[in-house]
Length: 100
Image (tube, rainbow, N blue to C red; front, side, top):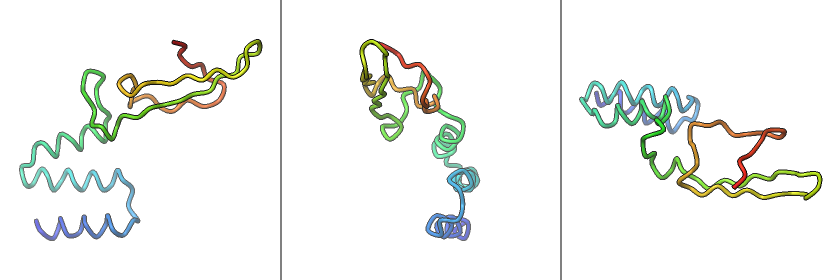
């Protein structure tokens, strides 16, 4: 198993494989070593965190969006960390934002 771990380390340092590929390799190693918590973490990273789960801190962030209203001008919306949905794709121009 140490060669698989060494291969994964080389792949990480090489920078040629996608994060998805690296996580899949990690899952295989974790399964072979019976590291259930690592397998579970990889599954969540690959498939997304459910709405009722508390994602790790590195998956939460503060977001700021700008909205242009014809009569008012630019309105800034700030989303506090706990309300950010890490499974929602980033919105682009022309999309609606939530007003508080």
